[in-house]
Amino acid sequence: DFHRMQLQALSMVSKVSMAPRGGARGGRRRGVLARAALRSVNGTRPLVESEAGRRALKHTWPGFVDWRRAEPRRDVVWGAGKKSTTEPTPGSSSSSSTSSSCFTENHDEDEDDKLDSLTLAECGKLVLETSDPKEKALLTHQAYLRFAASREGEVGVARGPEEPGRPALPKLVPPRDCPGPKQSGLSLSAYMIHNLAHIELNAVDLAWDTVVSFSSNGDLPREFFVDFLRVADDESRHLRWCLQRLKELGAEYGDLPSHGLLWSAGAATRHDLLARLVAIPMVQVR
Image (tube, rainbow, N blue to C red; front, side):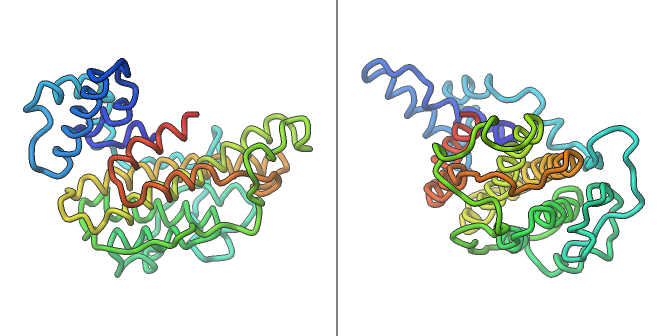
């Protein structure tokens, strides 16, 4: 999803480092594409005015415009026929329930009190500081309904935590120390979904961290931040699917050690927008 979220002007950035590396010509080409994209983000020059910009736009995800205009998705339950009448309130005991109703959608405006007085960046700070994965997902979706779907609300400025809130488990270890399927003690399905849940959790935090870390950049348009909010909402839905399915398989997020590689890439690019937009997709698809 990080390949989908980028502004149309930035859609080529993740491909910059893949430009030909042969000699000075390859280096110049990468530099031209990167600088053209960055100028477009800063509003100093529309990317399409240059030949490099026209080449970059050829690589834009074809569904970008439709994705931006899409209505909020409500399919937060994995599997046909799994419906419920209530959406748990963030912070309530129901948000930690093992019932599949934790993952269903019926938004109640009264549940927005926690976010009502916050700017978008402050919402991001709150989500980043939240340790419970389900509550992160719920807060993210509520923020999306408020800021993206309504097209209202101030971006604001905030400073996020050095490390995102995390549950006590999983224990974070170097990637080489993460167990393989045969050593995990879980079924293969549960093993794969646990790993996917960890990726989705980091994806939620990384999308929000981009909103928060670059909220002080006055040159970025509101749409930039709302695009990342859309990404966070997409990832929060994926996370809820994974958490639900783990429960159904008799497992929990935290049953396996995981690594912190994804977040470390975000922490290393907090002060460089171009590096953030290039590095995070590449780390996620390794």
